[in-house]
Length: 258
Ligand code: CO8
Image 1 (tube, rainbow, N blue to C red):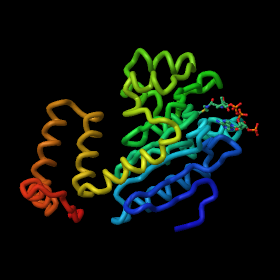
Image 2: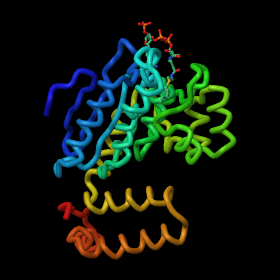
Image 3: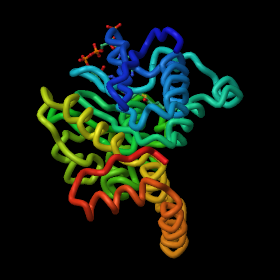
Image 4: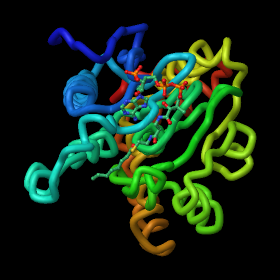
């Protein structure tokens, strides 16, 4: 894969670890970061040897937002014609499960980036928020939509209108993050979660992800129907036979991802 300037990509077994690496700007998300994250994750998504992606930042900042200095001089037509931030949508279209490991600041675009991932683990030092309003702008990478779906209107409205941040405890209570981990154990725990996911049948994990994501896009009856069709489809895989046979034989399954 290509050399990247703003991210580090490592492989650990069937897990790929992607680390945002712009420490001088607290991992502020400029166009270069967006292009590199999107390019790297799309390449990993197509790799059958990769079963889960972990996205992380530094101890101090997962990402302190979109790059304010890069945006400050922009004009409307410039933003509209380049469809500023639209490429981030591709992160939500990955089929491989993704885990965000958030330590420190996840503000603005940083919070939105974490919410684009499937599993969100927070260090006890994590701080979440959509402070765009304080800069005279609003969220632009889906924050007003995903935060509202994650924590409900009451908190999302307050956070987006006042710019107030949430600590890890509040974020967990509100349902934004799945779990809080001591900061020193965050990466190890995220990699362990990823390795667990990557050890499952890859196509079945993709279907589970697709089914959960469908709940945000459709009615309950349609969502249940969609789930049922995928449930029927897993019986076309060898991994379903292996998983159920291993249970009967009281041994761990050996999924072949097919
Ligand atoms: N963009 C650019 N540079 C940044 C950003 C950022 N978002 N955040 C931090 N930096 C830079 C600082 O400018 C500083 O650089 P320098 O040393 O050259 O001055 C360096 O990172 C270190 O930051 P601080 O010195 O400020 O570190 P502190 O520990 O004092 O403070 C904070 C940390 C509280 C996180 C503080 O940096 C801060 O408030 N950052 C901005 C947070 C924010 O407002 N984020 C939202 C950004 S807007 C956004 O994400 C979406 C915009 C949507 C627009 C929609 C358009 C379509």
